[in-house]
Structure formats: C-alpha cells, structure tokens
Image (cartoon, rainbow, N blue to C red; front, side, top):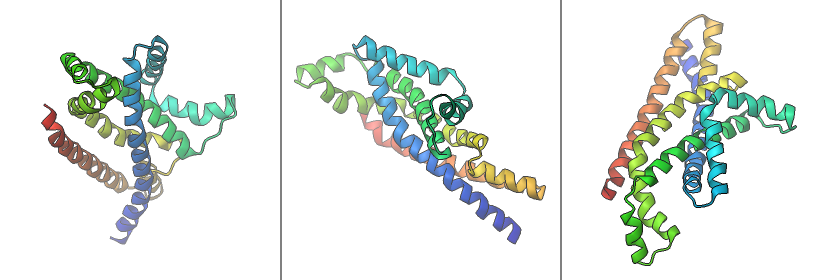
Length: 214
C-alpha cells in the first residue's frame, strides 16, 4: 500500500508540470486565437496573408515536430535557447493558437451580417460591435469546438516527455521501467480522466452561461 501511495505522490508531482503547461497554453492561446481570427478576416491583405501563413504552418505540421524544432532547432540554427518548459509553452501556445484562430474565425463568420448593420445604425464602432455584439455570440457558438481542443490539450501535454520534461506521463513511465508494473500507467490514466472531466464540467457551465446569446 505504501508503495502505491509513493507512486501516486511521485506521479502527482509530474502532474503539476502538466497542469502548469496546460494553464499557460489555454490562457495565452485563446486570446491569440481571437486576435488571429480578427486578423484573418481583416481587410488588410498583408495581415490576413500573414495569419493565413501562420495557421497553415502550425496546423499542417505535427505538434511533436514543432516542439523538436523550437527546442532543438532554434538553438542550432539561430542560437536561441529556451528552457524545456519555455520551449514547450511556446510550441503549445503557437500550435493551439492556430487552431483557435480557425475556430473563432468560423464562429465570427457565422454571425448574421444584419447584426453588423444594426450595430452601425446604433452608432457603434467596429471594435465596439465586435466586443459587445459579435464576440459574445461567437463564444457561445465556438464553445463545443473549443472544449474539444481543451480536452485534446490535456492529452497532448504528454508529448513533452520527448524532450525529457518530468510531466505526469514521464514520471509514470519512470516507475514502470524501475518497478516492472503497469500500475503507474493506471494511476496516470485516472489522473488524465479526472482532468478531462473537470474541463468538460467547466465548459458545460460556460455553455449554460452564454446560452443567453442564442
């Protein structure tokens, strides 16, 4: 029993890294996605093309490859060095920001154009229209897709084991290699399930909150 308790404690220590990476990614990638979406639908060809290129790169290549490039490639080619956590955070933020860009772009474009015209009649500027009318409705419409990405992110954090970050999965794997038992994998699986269940609950509450915009 004490051995299992020791395993749980050690794996939970790794889950703190997983949770920290998750929070940093969500907090920064969603605003990046909103800004990216606004940039992609803007009338500026240069800005729209730049955002389009960004999303093309980060949605079209594997997340693991991006992680390797930022952690191993940038120091080699440009002399830019990141700590493991910094490299992982930057990679995940840019990757998920690209996906959120497309999610929010689709949500914004789904809003009836009559609402823009109504806002113009009321004397609202474009920023005011987006902030007060369009984005609240967009958030409601993109919540299911955003929820799916948020859940996927929990599982994708396991990729950081590839650069030897001591996250939840790596700590579990170390115990398996040392003790020759799959119990740590079971414990890790339960923790992942708990995390994803919490996220599902949070997004369900958000959907209820923003249902007033439908």
